[in-house]
Length: 533
Image (cartoon, rainbow, N blue to C red; front, top):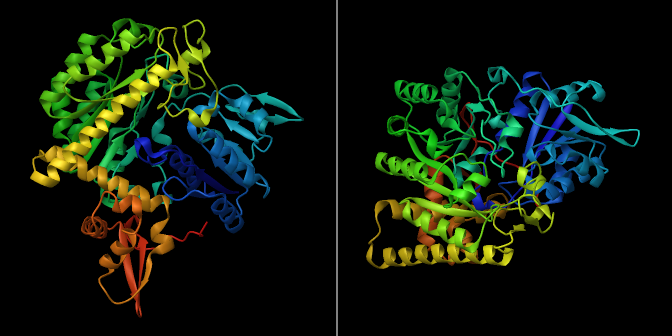
């Protein structure tokens, strides 16, 4: 059976992330000698025509998607198209794992929903096992929606092959500089009311063998060319002995790589953070959520303001950059508690930011909204981006929460704009600020050319001039780029991508052709062929 997995797009607010879930699904299928491809529409211009062209060319018998909540409706559009060509359509991921019956009712062209961990569930489907005998799926039979028992979590994660990242356009992710995702374990013992992590991957942590983890890390760095790795475990620092061993193995093998992690302030120590820093950890995201203890308790966060201060403080002292992530609009929120969070964020002495509470399917806040004093305003999932109010409390309206977030990020943007102007005029920025601004410019620049398929559609030029200057002149015509970058700066970014092996070009007679360069196993060049939308 030929399988096509589609990575549907979502807004780039958090930066494009390698779809490691789809890569694990593909790897398990490849291990069993099934033919599988990934159509990645996140880091390119999205169009239905691309899906149609791919299905016509590849002729998959099964098409699978795994959207997050905000991309759910886009995923439905994708599989509706595929169903017209006779493919079996499958959807998995956090959203439909807790929205399975509703999804099948809403979409007659959706055949099967995979709930929870999907690797072996999808394998059973592809192998042709009778649906009634496959745990972890919801499907139709004789016009009825059937929900089979849940599948047990995978006990031995070492059974899973390395995720099939070679099926992705990796050069595009390298261009955006958000790093390559890597998983060392699954499971989260906490049960925060706004999260489905524990339900999705289990409360009991399960760990991969550390040798395999570091082998994969070497593959990411040396084979695929990434210099930044994002460890995407829900909570890497839950087991200190293991993290120390993880870091020691990186150091002993001499792997020079920067990496990031998710953590909780009450699961770190100075010794642990120092070792992580030594092994290349440069950034940790802490889920702080609120500056009010009652709000934290209602959210079942199981931490204190004192522990938050201590965790952030020792991180700062060790020299790891951290981001304290807050959620506005949690149960019990008032204007006073919002102000407490704003002041608390300022006082921590690190980067901090605010998302807005979003009642995702499967979360306790959605299931107990009325009891918790929350009013859910709508279920338009295309707006569930954590950047606009979907709920409100008695004392904190949606309008108020939206205004607070808008004012905060407006002020942050104004500050960054001011710093950029100061730097251009006087060169007064610190190295960290200068690096941040240049990275920000690189990502905005990359986003514009990715979302326009610019290299594929406009990367061929007539003439014998400098290829970099030719491409820079064309890209500089994009107003949204020329509004914040000089032509020389555009040329500089292109040269960097050329040096990093992300972009390449070749000459044919009197023309130059640019293309994305992918790295897989050994350094090789191949042209990424996409149909014009």
